[in-house]
Picture 1 (cartoon, rainbow, N blue to C red):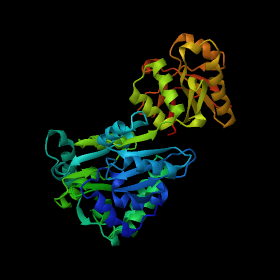
Picture 2: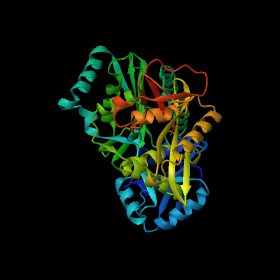
Picture 3: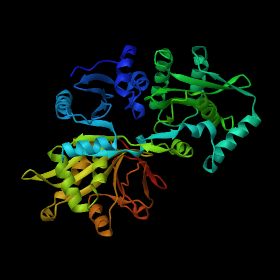
Picture 4: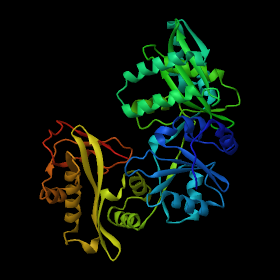
Length: 456
């Protein structure tokens, strides 16, 4: 397969494939075009499917392949074979699939893939009437914000046109300076906004700008995903104006062509404030984006051992491995081709620096008392030390295991460990999630909880 860069003239081809079947924000041509440099987006046609390949080139990152409009084609076996050839020795995943896609893939290739549906990535889809009217008891707070805005400010709304772009970029820079989130992602977003603006008309973008006493207070724009769903790509506002976001959303929705019955406001990226805000508008549904990763012998062995020892359900194990498994971070012992002992290392960002969280340490019942768990644990610690980690940590499930890990140099920490992940990486009982920590550098342990952000 030969993959191509995105050009404006490719838009008609994407519209042909997606006019009835587009579903999530990553399928909007404007998004694929504007973000192509940061996400490595490329496209090709294979049989009756349009295929988008994405990869940032980060070490250990899997190539992601999205089939448009979906994976449900009789040509799927040959398409997957060609994707495997394109990926070469590197792992890959099929991305942004619907639940129907997942079931189709499972039935066609039993025990060939593991699946994940990451809550942070799910799109928020709303009935467009929600924003046009804010009617009903559930939306009373939004209605009150809009009414408060109208009572406080002299405002006017304009269609977003190229002569307003420079003011929008100034507002975006002001907004970005006030954020404390991932600066790399925010800088990438600013580049994407410039790409959107540079090709605004050709991308069929529709936008609006809200002014208060002549000063730009908010702007937004988006494009269609399909014939009845409109995607909001960007919405920025000066929050010093009370109720500015609901007001902007309300005015923009009223200007949308009536053919768009649904509004997609994209994902929340796991950011608590953004999640709370999107939920407060009461979405019609959260649109899933399943990923499927090809299983190999090691992954099958890990899954089998994990479930034999911990009895976790398959969906949880698949989700963990889809997000955090990397061959360098999986320390295994095999006998006759079977995985009989394992220790998973999850690199995490924390107040201390980079921490290696050791998880799912397990030994098959008939291989216990042979020192295998000690071997894989020591290998994981040695890896973390050799790669400059500040510390390693784990959460023993009981007092017996606390005594066991103390032999390696792990020391109890009096406060809890908290993960910024929707997967429970602790014991299943937050009141028992007290870690043991081994410092690998001269770093001060946090006085209270350790907050760990797993690196996916």
